[in-house]
Image 1 (tube, rainbow, N blue to C red):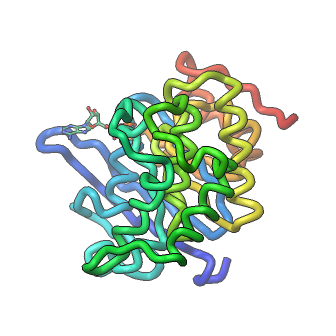
Image 2 (cartoon, helix red, strand yellow):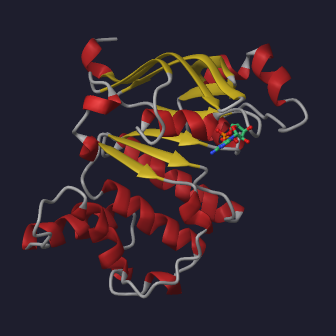
Length: 251
Ligand code: ADP
């Protein structure tokens, strides 16, 4: 592994919310091209870890290195796309069009005056094409189904052409068929567009079909390895016992 290919390094990270110790000595390396699932029981610290990596929570102990820099000194946030958990549940009712929602992703990178130019419109179109939603660009976001809205939020997260995309529980509340198509789209972003994907999920089923790496968190990082290693790990089977039924074969 060349140093170049390491995009995110988490070293001995500890984190507490006041009296609650949530993460203990977590080490994790994310490498270019990974399609990584972060799994683990409820309350095991998955969202917390993601927020620390994204600079939304402080590094209390240990180190986080994003593209060679600490979050406090990191300025190339357009290299990182993020689809937070709350979006899936927010019931987007505001009267913005699909195009406008995706364009919001571009505004964060702009300095005043925040005007969208022709080039920006092309970026919006390209992002919508990548999630196969260009035909919906003039529709109001609130009119779309949950699965379609989710694609629009992915388009917003990739409109700056990030090198890595983080998703927190992206399939919460959607049916199995929508989920399946959603994962196929992530596969395509990962393989055809060279975007590293890091996904916090409850859906252990995804591990068997789509991802190439798995990190299993239970305050500590109890497992980090390839799909095949994951399937043969007794530690993982013990931790997930009762919560999930693991079927480890690829179709
Ligand atoms: P997961 O994503 O694995 O379900 P979280 O990272 O959301 O886990 O939460 C880990 C633990 O931290 C849980 O016990 C949760 O109740 C607690 N927690 C999460 N957010 C906060 C917060 N803002 N304040 C206090 N405790 C929190």
